[in-house]
Length: 124
Image 1: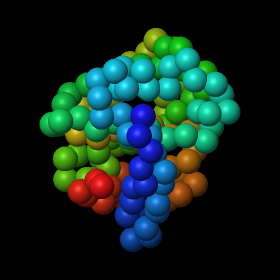
Image 2: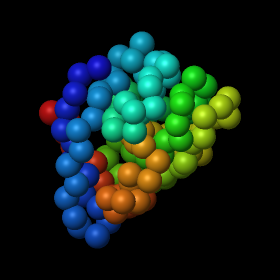
Image 3: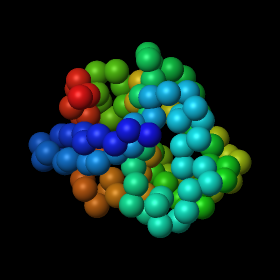
Image 4: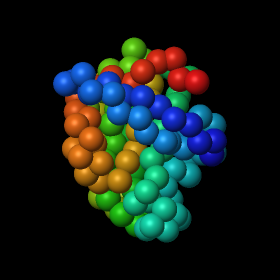
């Protein structure tokens, strides 16, 4: 996966820069954090980029540590953040999204990223 820097503007107006792995190809999206070691998961973020807004779910099979996932509309608005635990359960919002950002658990809270924050578009 290609590495890029993204910017999120928090609901409080603070700018947060994050280094992410871009999952914009289907094989990258299917793999995500599966079969990745705990230390890599603890320091990595993946931004899933879909060609259009989709209604979908994520699973945590073969993922070794809990993650937080932010669901983002096509206009960049973060509208939901969920905690995901390893296992077969499916996670997703009840609304379509164009981007999903997976991060180590607690990272969004530490950085002040909440629903209402915005991903700066366009992505470079």
